[in-house]
Length: 254
Image (cartoon, rainbow, N blue to C red):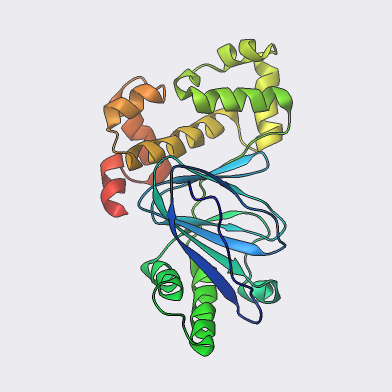
């Protein structure tokens, strides 16, 4: 596991970059008052901030505003890139004040590699690349791969259970009995705590876990069974509703 991501001092530079492998395992960032743009290549990572989770597939990333301490976890080795953004310039790029998934571009990947590989760049060239990186970050597409969590202990336990055993997400009544509450109470907790209905939350959960499975090379039959669908065709239809394409099309689209 990569235990440390060490950045040089920012100084007057708009960004500083870390780029390299992140081995299987988890990495906790310390809140240093600076925003981060983190990208994942050749794999998939999960990002947790407080009770919320984001599932970041290959060639995607996430914007983390200043004041947060994200946990990054990879189930397999990935190429990991982190842009630490100078707080003096955050207002110029109008990024949101909450975490947001970003669709990476070849330009972002190339900038990070250029800034950390080979001989150190002259200061002026490094600053110019940093400005290009900031401009590109502000323009990236922002798909919604957010899976809201909850501070309510009962719902948090149910969410943890479903993520560990997603095939059991078929029955809200059964989950309510597990939590020792009524089905109506559990449904209300999902709406109040996550801002999503139970069905919408479950569909989002199944979709992001399907992305993780696709990244690992799992086929529709295996994914349908592991996610609690009645058949592979039902899984494919649900995946299409979420993404606008089939799992096979998603693999090629990336």
